[in-house]
Image 1 (spheres, helix red, strand yellow):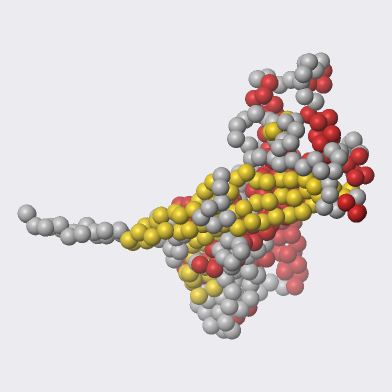
Image 2: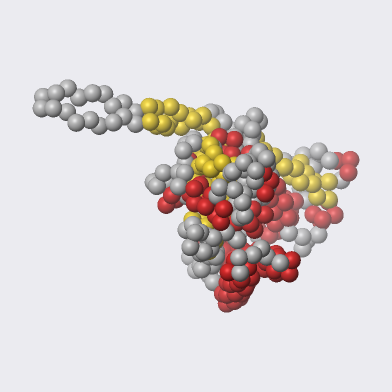
Length: 413
């Protein structure tokens, strides 16, 4: 971890302490925050969000650099400056090859398969030309980075074909009973069922001009991968949260049950910080205990960033903040000791919504079909002189264990 990240982490902790001092001063004087204090609180929270984004960006860049260095070491068995070495006879100039592929004439389609080993090359469908795997590898990495639900460690199944995948599950268990000497044992059969995961198709089309491809210095792979991967990641995460199950995965919020119902009369004010039966954060304590203890060691909180802004103000009955900033770089902040993941696809706070989820996301099943397809067409936009790239991703998701995740639901009025 760089010194810059360490400095930013210290700055983040100082900002949090300043924000906490503003809230504590109002609490000690048993009054609401003044307009000036609200402004200071909001500015501190905005600074925290900006610091989080900057820290994450730096850590991501460091990880990408480390991954690239490791990949090169695996291939060469030692770090090598290839620019200072003569190219072997028959060796492939990967940079030149990818530029050549980008300029291929119309009708020269190709397909890139998902990696199956550590070798950094893939065979194109029509020409047997090696291509660096950083193309597909970068595309999949963007998908992970833009999906909050995948960061909560759901159960993921990867298959090479798209037929229905039936996953067995036990929904109830029998019970052991005391038996007299020579007495007959009674049956204690478990209740078994299954979850069926399909393979819904998600795609994105990216078009770039021939002029850009003609520029030797233009990073074609980075541009296409970042755009396609980001869009696919956002769309997939939206479905994992609130998908309908029709032509898309079934979101966990569609199947999870309510663990805590906010008090009537709180409505769109949520009832978390100031009003209702669960004032001062007690509602989140109730939600925490709405799932059984066996789930809690792996449980996570998921909520919109605007909801996090409110939750940061909450205290327990002893006056201690429920929210605690992370002390280790790259780790999420915690609420009641469990990690918090902001997700822009969770509902905002309003009447009759479920803006907060808590539970063990291992109970949410995701099915991926690999390989990821990435294809090029020179003919699709022939009239506008554009080169078309499309990425196609097949996935499904479903909450298999409805006891694993619970929701905080606001009042209707």
